[in-house]
Amino acid sequence: MICGVDEAGRGPLCGPVFAAAVVLDPARPIDGLDDSKKLAEGARLRLAEAIRTRAAAWCVAQASVEEIDAMNILQATLLAMQRAVEGLAFAPSRVLVDGLHTPRLRCAVQAIVKGDATVAEISAASILAKTARDALMRELDARHPQYGLARHKGYPTLAHLAALRAHGVIAIYRRSFGPVRLLLAQGEPQVPRQHEIDWN
Image 1: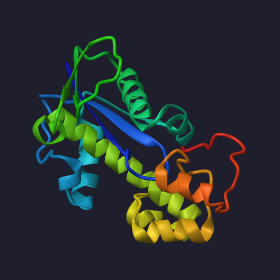
Image 2 (image 1 turned 30 degrees about the horizontal axis):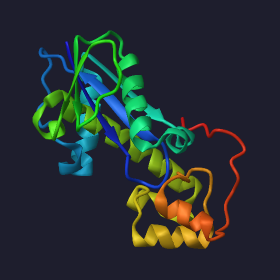
Image 3 (image 1 turned 45 degrees about the horizontal axis):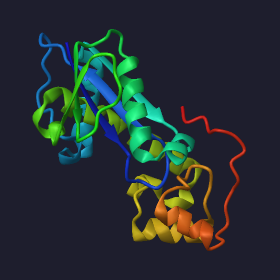
Image 4 (image 1 turned 90 degrees about the vertical axis):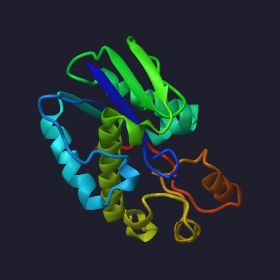
C-alpha cells in the first residue's frame, strides 16, 4: 500500500499549514489527478470529492500557527505530514512525499521532487491539502473580511500587506514570518493571543 503525502500553505502569512496523506484504490481509479496548482478551482473540488469517496484511505491534518512560530515552518510542515499519515485508517507500507524533506515515520519513506505532478498518490494528497486549506481561508475571510483572505489565501500580496498595516496583526497570523514580524517591530497594532484558536 503506497501512500502519497503533500502539503499546502507553507508560504502564506496566516493560518495553519495543511498536509494530506492518500492511499489510492486501484479498483476505483480517478481520472484527471495532477498537481493541485495546475488545476482550476472547480476541477480541484470535483477531484477532492472523488478522492474522499474512492480512495482506500485518506487523512488531512495540520500544524497550528503556534506550532509554526515555535518550531519554524519546515518542522511544522513535517509534523502535519506525520499527523496525516498516522491518521490513516491503516498503516501504509511505503510513503512518497512531495519535495526534498520527509517526516519521521514508522515505515519506509521517500522524498520525490515535483512528485505532485508525477505520482498519482501525491497528486491526490496535494488536491486534498489545497482544497482543505482554501476552505479554511474562506471561513476566516467571513470572520475577518477586512484582510481579503478569500482572494489571496493569506499570501503576502501588496493588498494583503496593506490590509495588515491598516487593521493590525490578529491571532491568525504567523508572527515568525518576516512581513508580520517587521510590522510588529514597527509598533503596528496587534491582538494578543489569549489561547490556541480552534481552527475546526
